[in-house]
Length: 286
Image 1 (tube, rainbow, N blue to C red):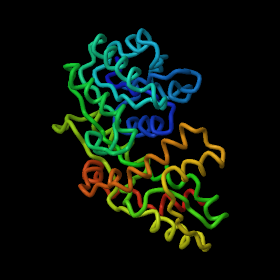
Image 2: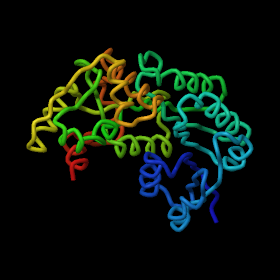
Image 3: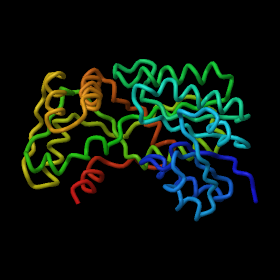
């Protein structure tokens, strides 16, 4: 049996599953491994011939064992916001000890200058990669359109999309778009180290509400709130305070231009236009 060359961490997550699907269209399953906390959740990968390895970002020894024999790793950022600095550094150190040749990391759009609070842990991870001596690629992903459209049905029901982004523009793309880019970079020798990845088109939340109104046939207005009020609203509808703080801070960062990019790097990389807001909204409304 062939030894896997490529490995994807967090492979049973929303992005990870899409990346694995893209990779299986590019390389034989025997060349692919995944590192997951719970191998039972990756049984479908194993059934396709993918090597499933147990690993946890909080367990350096498990990471080193999972990375053994692997040439190129896609390090998908942990979802443990606030703990990612240490978790990612442990993964990078484990990759180096295991002899990994290249690490691609899912960072944040313009992480080096981003006004979003999320940028801090990404900047620290990028620094760790630079200091590691490993070859690396930074996949600086912009906002997933699904981050916005996940509440579309409720917004149609209530006639309001609340936020704190003012007239800041969002250059979003779908998770599938970012997954395609990750698979391409992981499996090919691209010269760039930093990829600023974002959607071809941008919109304000006012324009988002207008698109939602048009597609649903019901009027939805954008209600812009101060960041603190938006955070309180998110908590009132049941979001945990840390999640509410993250989302309200991200909107405030978008108001400062933190989620806008018009380089079209993503569409050039994947060889097609990025998925439109309308397409993702339609899927969310079904």
